[in-house]
Image (cartoon, rainbow, N blue to C red; front, side, top):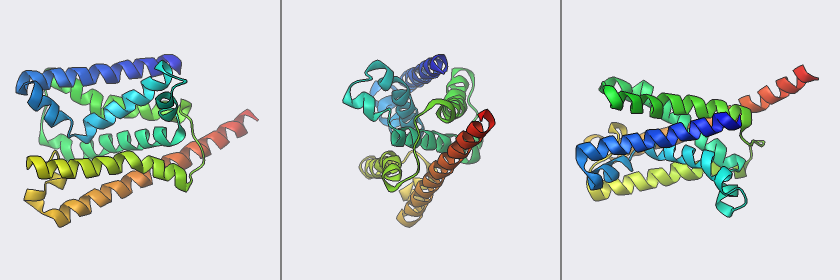
Length: 207
């Protein structure tokens, strides 16, 4: 899976570079960075790219070891699964990208989620579910939630309609956020259970 990991990392970084380039051309540097860094899709693809890259580039460093631990990998895969699922269920019907926008959209919301999920099942470090692992899983999505809500208060705009406080109100936005966090926790737990069952079945077949 080494080559697959390298290809997937290259694809993720290249797609992020493409999306930033397209946004800079359309909005200018400052506005492009402000807008893009509010999206869970962009930040989660960056998260996945770091998980794929840092442990290989700096394997003995503290940050390399951090991004190679099972809880971080599980957080990344659960988050990227949510990216793909929420996009295709709620957001894809709202616009029709063309050209390079379509290339970027397909990679960010489909190719990277599917590719990293496959990589996680086959090659990522895993351990049994525990309170410690689940806490590690929830650090990133919880931090994003706090960040995006605070950012919305400052800028007066929100990246997704289901957390758009001026339109739907605080109660509905908080309810939607809590629902997505619970969904992510359920996805992480489900993936972990499936991975353990697959590992047991593989050992049984080999035995």
